[in-house]
Image (cartoon, rainbow, N blue to C red; front, side):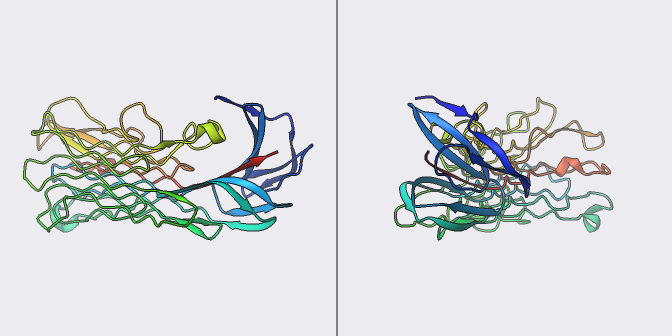
Length: 355
């Protein structure tokens, strides 16, 4: 049943604290912390607290709560120069969900995991000796109420430069690696906790062959990352990021990505004279979950400039979505955007209880 966002009972009491409104309800016995609003489902009014950064959650008395939490997403796989390959997508943060959990009145620390950062990127200037290798990063853990939602795994690079990483959801594998297992997506390391449902999936894979031009997609909390698809420089496709999960029925559509969380990042794609292809996140084009698209490049020749499509590479903050994988950096652009890989989205904790 669709819910209704109800704001008539919420007024601003203490202004801004660390970027969030700290409001109170004019009626009812409610706590404080994060962004608060009242969401109505089937005539039942729920107080919702959304944390997108570190904070304190306070309850005046015992409450039966539903709680969702997700770690920061991993960044997409990095590029390092003119090497004709796309890279793996970043995995989403692992997630935990618990319904009907009696939380004792009091104060609780909430720690939100940051998304994996996008480091300095590659530069082909000066040949191999002048290359600055970029590094992908795992997302950080989110923790609260004595449990931990793990940060997502970073996507992998190519040619034995950087292996995909395990995480809450695993990073997608990068191509053309001769080291054993480096072309494979990595697995989830999300812990299980008594009373909580854990979500985490592995990243997608690619292959070692010299005719591989894309990376695997990062894992999502709703499904694994997609594998690299395509056989030549006209049809290559990085793997789609794994699907997210929809919690809008509990918290509405103003949290996460329209109520969805935990989509994996798309793998990077390299092509020659062809249409560009940004591998989609979140389980496919048009899906929600906060993951970033894979980067893509089209190279007309080794002497003419590349064409790039930098379409929403970064994971969305507050969703735990994974970042998109890079593509090659053939050009000597001042900003080196050809090799850009997406940052991971920061995590979140969302809590509700009846008004």
